[in-house]
Image 1 (tube, rainbow, N blue to C red):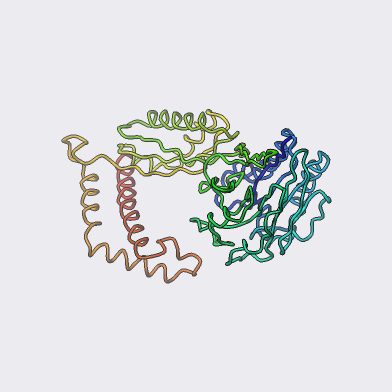
Image 2 (cartoon, helix red, strand yellow):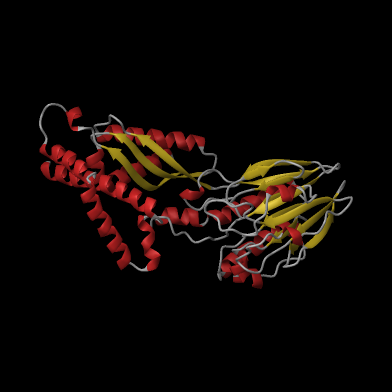
Length: 419
């Protein structure tokens, strides 16, 4: 007989949604409830597979939460596991350290929450004893490695380490209890159940290290299907892992090339085809698309001018596809060059060409740079990052703004010419 458990982390239960457009309350409600649905899916998986345990490697909660609705939901799901005889092993991550629910909620005795000193709990299986080693941190900051605080492997048992760590560092994640993969492999445990980084990663070697990633993405920066890990410990203490899907709503960037399109109807056909393709590829129940229109098209001006109409058309196409939402529309289109539009002179396009040329002149760019820097200085500190974090970022911002500015002015001029 084998010992089996589900490993997850970074659930961020009831995480607040700051990125979704408020004009779409239905979408906000869908994604706002997705973390709960994902956790329910995790519990369902535990029950369906008849596992021995659920391991949560930190950040079950999301910061300074006080809602007792979250607490009641969690207690109800934990009761389901308790009644099925599934034990739960949890450590507190940096977000859990800020949560009041962490300190107030009382759970059953089948739930082990590891404290600030490393603990080891042995659970006997039918063919193998499994020792779980865990360590929580009381503060949202942990600048030093926690590995030296973990106990040595227990002889005769399969040893599972539970740790919340940024490892050697990852973009978009704060440094938290840093340590190297090599050091974890060298500690002697059969499996390390990790958490903190929201992207799934498996590190094979002397032991099996798994960062399961977030089980439900919360915005476009956490795109793709999300999952947990089903772990099997054989009698000989060998480890097998399986990835299991848990995400309810799947964020994806959907790029649609409108090169050569000259009619709105053609653009909408391409948009729908792009959404259909992404919907077919997504395994999660819902697709939340950030739609990007790219390419060279004579529609670039009208799409900028009538962006609200383009959004409405895209949302209708998503509704027709089914279980699909458009979270945001991004335009990265360019207009055809003047020579590509025939021999008839167009003063508006000629002006656009002249403006593009002027935008590349250093004197003009210098004035634009000074204006942006003055604007930044007049803003409060927390609003000054829109133009980049360094000189290179500022120059990239200027490139983008000058190009978009020319296109926007051209779109408005052409709109006036057709009315």
